[in-house]
Length: 504
Image (cartoon, rainbow, N blue to C red; front, side):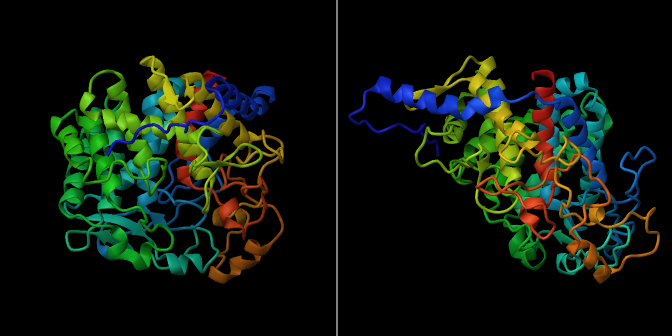
């Protein structure tokens, strides 16, 4: 259901006074950015992509640049008679969660699709594509058998009870799957989206691989749509409380269809979106975007065609996108679902806040380009949102991450003179195999976890969960919500940094 942009109630103040007050508030919010010293966005881009090499699972390639990592989880899938080696560890643990990994791949693809030219100028396009392919190669393995999607490798309970290197881990490597009798439309829908989006990236680079990705995406989406249900109902004991699908599977079906529409140009996917817009609750929670909730992303993605004048039947999605943008503007909506810290950081309740910062900022930047080309200005009640304003808001968030914040520290490891040194990350916090060749067993790693010493291995480019709503950050491993990096924090940041590396 389409939602109208928010309107301000009439009151005794004059319209012109309201506009002036709102503009002053926005200018005050953005003043810190304009006064801040410039950042080396190209260096930050390089490091944000390098981070993914530290998250790799499986057999590492000869050109591996993070050298303190070694091969790990070389028998993943063997217990189920399949090959599930490779892919990424999602965060600071040693489990391969398929839901956030697929979302990571989708956002890496979107970053490359929209900002690949900027990456080429910065000399990082090949590295970005390689980081994407590491994920899609794994997703192809996870979907190799029709009607089955392997969605997780590793028992999270046993994994989280240990603090050990991925190269040493001896915890259960159970392979979890969804199928016709145990549906998982959410994770399957996201996997279809990831494969479809990646097929666009590889269309000209590797046509055969692109076709493989697209054909697999079609089959996985058909499976997700035919056997509807959330994967947490089938695998709650494995997925929760780590990656429970709280939002439902409906948004992932629309998200998968949207990317298949973009990748295949087949009429059936656009018709699916229009036909299921109400049934799949397209107008719900339009201010959210992340691994569990795709609504804002769906609206922004589909709006591009509307703004280009090619899809008037998708107009409701563009109205939703405009409403979403208005909800992000500080001071515009007194009932906004997005809050800002005193230092100006987007803040949402729950853990790992930087995932919201980078994903919402990515949408701000992407949409600013779409409306710029269409010469569209968003009406937000008594004021308006121009493309330049959206870009400034997005850059303000990026600059906060890189050090323009009350603590004057970068939240990207290895960037700037001061950054987190005790991140919640097993491989980074334990001695490398080169430094400590003998095995460090499950409970033997506890002393490293509790140590106040900095991590011995620098996970360059890792962006941590970030400070709390008061801009306070405890640089301590046990504070995992603040100190743990994730792949889905970095994936949209790659696109942001690519753009600003060329447009500082």
